[in-house]
Length: 233
Image (cartoon, rainbow, N blue to C red; front, side, top):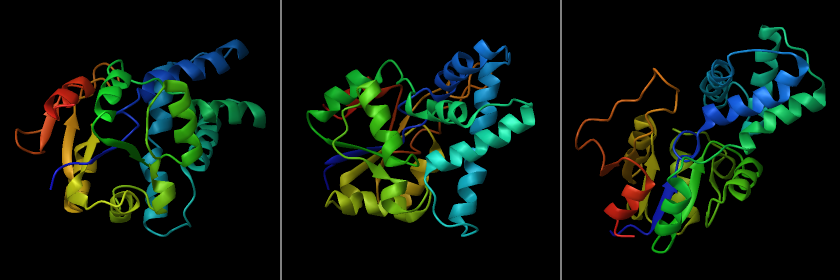
């Protein structure tokens, strides 16, 4: 089957979460006289992401949107760091995840791809988060899909199955685009085609990601512009 839709991981693949969260944390906390390694602060917050979702995946708690999980994780991190903020300040910092910057190639690459394909995030981010991020960053999505629509967090099967179903497509007509091999492997198990995009600096300097083995995925490209070229968009 020919590809009709591209579905995207967002955090790390479309947007540079680490540098963006570091910037936002510094802007909110530094004026209060709080000094940290802001990149490390962002990474420590992000490190709580998978464990929090795991509790939902394994049925330890009902489904809750990522904005809520991010806030819980932030409160825990602030307590560990001995940082005291008002509820309004916590909310403002938590919504840093709605203000993430795209990688430099993203908007132009998506604009080219949109001429030929349906574009939709299949992210663990909730709809309010994804919509506000898209408006700020200029991301030209055709639909917002993913965890809140599926009521399941990747790599659970329903996160992918629901995306194809909502678009009225067979999984083989969908190309999952991600910088994370685990995400692509999970999508492939559901029948999706796969495209790896290399984001070596997602985790910051000194923690560069390695390229996957040749042939591991249907496509492996350096950025979204290269993906558009590979797909003839």
